[in-house]
Each structure stands twice: as structure tokens, then as C-alpha cells.
Length: 178
Image (cartoon, rainbow, N blue to C red; front, side, top):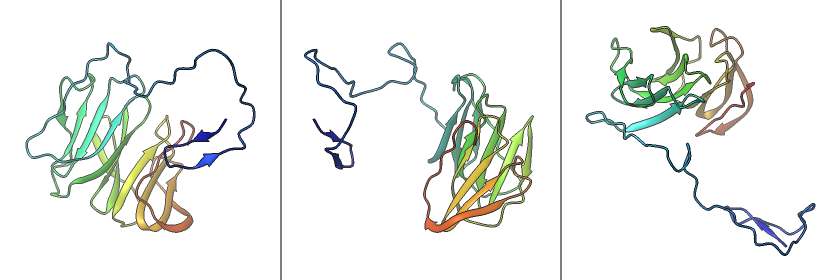
């Protein structure tokens, strides 16, 4: 028996796997929401999507683009551009708290939070942010930029700490507890 991941790495020394006579079927496709899920195409004139975030129950959808930040409270049926209109900078990335009540976005060279209809610039350093992520409660946040360290906040973006090594970061993710 051997295990091969999609990156081509083989692990011949896998332990804890036993052979059995029964056929094992591993699905090769996965449709979030199950086979009866209905997908809705998000559209905005001239938008090129840079990021997408969905609440844990699928009801809140946030989509980031150079044109704005669209937010939907009903799974994408209706969309509202909640992007800050005081600047022409586009949105690079977006993340949501698990319930969708808190939005965390990278716009231009800053990181922003959005809650209860209000945008607030965080105290993050000026970087060309590539990706952002949030804990389930929206309190612990993380942002990355190419050629920099990972930046973390444990207080909803009020303060930031650079951690780890300088890398060419492109994406970041967070566990539920941050």
C-alpha cells in the first residue's frame, strides 16, 4: 500500500492502514452543500474577483474586487456594495467571522474591519496585502504580504505583531480559534 498526494509525494511508510476485501470508493468531486445545493453566480459589471468568503452556514457571502466589496446576507441572492467609496483603491482579499457579522478586508496598502455597517482602518502597517483570514469570532486576524513576515492581531485589528520569517506569502488561512 502506498499513499500519493496530489503533489506527487509518495509515502510508502504509512502506518495504521489495513487491507480489506471490500471495495473502497473515494469521491473525486465534492459539491459543498450536497448534491441538492443551488449555486448562484455572483456578477458585478467589470468586476474581477480577488477574494471570496462565506459564513459557516452559507448565508453571508463577501466578494472582493478592484471595483468594490459585495456583501450578501442571503447566500448571494441579493448583493450590496458595502465598499468604502472615499477611495478608488480596490479590495485585494476578504475574510469573514464564522457567523458573517464581521468582515476583514485588505484594500490597497491597509487592512480594514467592517461590522454593523461601519468600516474602520486597522493599525496595520502599510503593505501590499495578498491575503487575510479570521478566527471564527473575528477577534484573531492574520494578513500576509509578499516579501514580509506574517502579521497577526489578537484584538480585532487594533494592534499587530509581525511573526515568523520573511517569505513570498500569497495566501493565509486560520483555524476557528485563530
